[in-house]
Structure formats: C-alpha cells, structure tokens
Picture 1 (tube, helix red, strand yellow):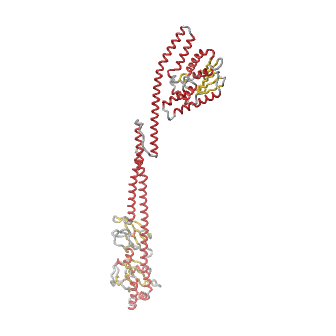
Picture 2 (tube, helix red, strand yellow):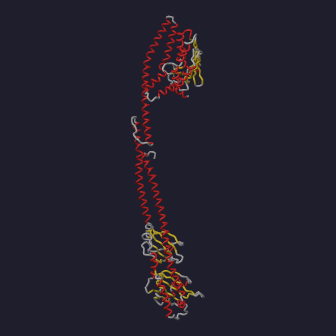
Picture 3 (cartoon, one colour):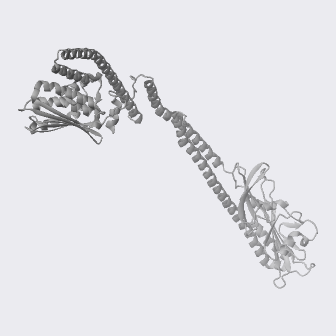
Length: 621
C-alpha cells in the first residue's frame, strides 16, 4: 500500500468512507424494513384471522342459540318425548312445529335447514327430508351428537348422509351442527337437533380477504379437514401435523417449488382453525418496492461518491504532483525553477517554502563560489609574495655573511634577527605556528628594538616547557609587544621592562605581557575593553547586512580588524575559536599595563600549519 500513488489512496479512502457506509446502511435499512413489514404483515394477518374467527363464532353462536330455542319449544318437547314409534304426533302440532322452524330459516338466511330427530327415528323439518327409509339414528352425525351429551357441536361436512333438502345442497356446500336433547332425569338421549349452515356465509366472510396478490384464508376443523378453502393454485391440501399445539402461530413450507407462509389462529369456541396462506415472493410487495428505492439510492450515492472521490483526489494530488515535478527539476540541477501557485493551504505553504529554499540554496552557492574565488586569488597572491621573501632571505644572508667577514658582529646579529623575524612572520602562508616559534619571533623583534633603544628597553620571557609544542595563531604576541614599547616604555622616563609569561591552565594557554610603562587612564581603559567586548557583534552585524554583497562585507571586516594592533589580535582569536577566548587588558596610569591572552590548547597532530580541523575540535572542547 505504501507504493500506491496518493491519488489512488485518496480515491480508495473516499470510496470507503462514502460508498461502503451507504451500502451497509442500505442493507441495514432493507433488513430492518423487511423485518418490520413482515411483523406488520403477520400482525395484520392475525388481526384479519381474528376478525374472521369472530364472524364465524358469531354465526355459530346464533346457531347454538337456535338449538336452545328449539329444544325449549313445547311442541318439540312433546315430539322428542314420544315413548313409542307407533305414537303419531298430531298433524296440527306438526304443522305448528314446522312453521316454528321455518321462522328461523326466514330470520337467519345463513341457515340452510333444520331437522329435529327423536330417538324413535321420527323427524320434523321445514326443508330437510330423508333420502331413503334407512334409520337416521344410525348415522354418524347422530352418534356424534349423542356422544357429546347435550353439548353443542360443529361437525363440519357430513358426506354420504341420508338427508337432503328441497334446494338439493351438496355436502360440501353446507356445514352441520348438532345438539342432543337429554332427559334431565335419566340423561338418556331423547333426540337430536340438526342444523345445516350455508357455506357461503363463511365464504362471504373470508373470500374478500387477500394476502398479497394470491394469498387467501381457509378454515379447517380439528382433524385438519377443510371447512372452507378457495380454489387456489398455491395449495391443494394441508396437513394437520404442520400445526403446533398452540392457539396461534406461523410457519413456512416449500410446496411445488414455492415458499408459502402460513399464519393461523384457532378458535376456542368453534375449535376450527383459520389459516392465512400467501407466497413469500408476493406477500410484501412494499418490501420489494423499498428495496428498489434503496438500490437506486445506493447506486446514486455510489455514482456521486466515485465522481466526488475522483474530483477530490485530483484536486488534492494535482498540486502535489506539480510540486513533485518542480522538485525533480530542481534535483536535476535547475535551481531557477519555481513552484507557481496561489493556494493558501498546506500545499501552497509547502510550495512557498520550497521556493524560499531554492533561493537560499542559490545564495549559498553564490557565496561558496565567491569564497572559492577569493581563496584562489589569495593563494595566487601568496604564491606571488613567496617569490619576494626568498629573494629577501637570500639578500639578508649575504649581508650577514659580509658583516661577519668584516668583523661587524652587531650588524650580523641585527641582520640575523631581522631574517628570523621575516621568516617566522611569513611562515609560508600558514595560519598557525608552534608556540616556541612565535616566542622566537617576538625575541627577534625585541632584539631589533633593543638595538634601536639601547639601554632603555629590557625584557624577560618565561615559558612553561609543556606548552612549547602547542600551536598558536601567528603574530599575536608581536603586536602586543609593539604596543607595550610604543605606548608604554617609549613614553616613560628611564629604562623600561617587558615581561612575557606563558603557562597552561586547564584547557587554555595563558599568555601575559606586562610592562611598567606609562599605562592608561581609567576612561581610556574602559573604552578599550568595551571595543574588545563588542568586536564580534560588530563583525556579525556587518556580515549579515541585507544591502551588502560578499565583497563589500569582506572589505568592511578587513577595515575593522585592519592593522596589527591589539584589536586585530583579539578579533582573530575570537573569530577562530569563539567568544570564550581573546584578550583582556588591565592598566593603571603611571604604573604600567598587563595584557592577558587566552588561547585554546591546539595540539600539532598533523604538523604545523595543518591545524584547521584540530583547532575547530579544540574550540568545541
């Protein structure tokens, strides 16, 4: 993944944070809506089934009340309580009973017929009659009523019975209810009341109930036999073992390649079970419609998310690619390239920083080139200057030889001191020399000055033997001694003394130049020490001025440290080793001056003159 371009990383990132949540949300909503609608469908179906059961129970309850009313009728009682078969009922009384029964069928159109049968196989009915002379008391419906011991019972369809009606209803067009009339004393069955209920009553209650496109309601009895079932291609039959021993519930079955959902509720009054049957593929069209909208929404979000991802990735990666191209161009060596852009975000800030970096690099390269040019010129000047010292050395040697030949020892010694002075002072262009050579250089200078001032100048030099092999910036003692002679010893009356001491203290070399000359006033001393303190700051201000080029800076620094005075020595030491080193001055007017030089210990590891790296490491130490 680390090698994938940032554009594709951004696209993948945006797609993950926009499209994936939309898909997950769509799936979650679809699942939730499906569950909610399924629960609502089940609840609505159970409610419909409950309403249907209430209607059926209402009809059956009316029929039950009719059986009670019939059993309480005095004429029916006389008929049921006939002792013998030969006893004939009065025709007028039979007519009254028939009219009484006919009144029920008139008031209750759902009643297809009523038949009252006594234990002697005699019956009275308004619409029903026996097909043959076979005893009706031997039929199944009579026996079921007799076994119920006077309790009202629904027996559903009674196929093959020996009873018909004037309207010739088929067995599957009516359902029958029976109730046995018992002798209250002996509990013997005195007769049975049979009522046929038109099936169209149930059909009218259930046929208008639709579950989905092809779902329907059906009614079965306690044995699983169908009481009412519309003609439907979904289901040809139903098995009683599918239903659990519960009053209501739901289950699904795969029948003829279709997954069907069954929701049922059993009526405790009729002992019938009303079942809702519908196909799960067609049951909830609303779910499919919602899924369509969800899929359309997800597709739209996906399209917008992909488009937005490409746009955002392009808008973010394009300036980065442009900046990268600019960096590659700069990497190839073209430092004139600049990142063009007016953005104010992080990429714009990075581009401006890149431009500033290129500008600074160009300045540094120009500075290095200038320094290299100055170095080459200095080397050339040193090369030219070395020609003259060789000629001077040879000339001085010739003069010294001629002086000794002529017995002028004082002249020979003077020439020898002068030759040493020039030789050590030039040192083949080296920046640092051995400390012992620097001391020898000062001794040669003092000998020359003694010849000039004769009995007015005396000097004493004390050197710690351990410091003789240390390296020292050249020409730092001679300017101090020169100041002591011209500004101290020369101005006093009588002979003057200069004392030079060199010792090691921790990581420093301490050099003291003490004279008993005229000294200086406190005001002059304060000004001098102030200049010594501010020397490095003045050089840094001059070198960092915005309106100065490299050559102008070099000229200004040279003017500040120009000459071989005390300021020159102090500046050279500070610039080479830092502010912890340099010169300090103590003086009293009329008593003399003490100049202290603090110089780091620089060990000659690679030979005198090759001290650049050693001096830097000592400074750091």
